Length: 164
Figure 1 (cartoon, rainbow, N blue to C red):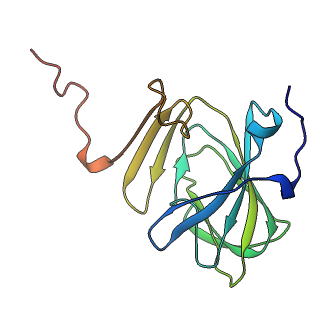
Figure 2 (figure 1 turned 135 degrees about the vertical axis):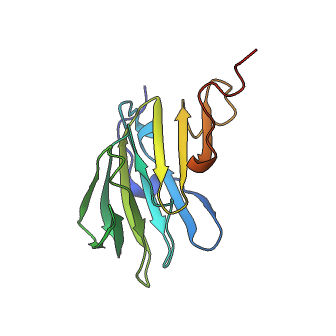
């Protein structure tokens, strides 16, 4: 049985990102203390960065808590200032995309929490993409896990390739 507690100073961060805008450090928490139904991690963003593209979920609900720093929340076509102590709700609603951006000149650190579901569908309004995944999205080597990202404008018909 895992110890059900961990301190911020014990977390191990991994960097991820792509290009100039997307770069973050993520420290998983829930798997280190035995969390099952909720996933939580601590995210660090340097000035001008964001962790993920602007997106919405069909299944997973997320909540964020700003530990330190300030930035901007993009949510459902609006922008809101963020500062330490703010809670942010991101329900599983396709018409409520969200993204946290560090628009300050100091690091921004927040807790990201979500429901743990086997399957989700995500929409990416800025790029016109969608994503579908099943299984552990972080364990890409497991053949039981499935993830695909594509553009909605190149989708095929349900019966495509199925006729004799």
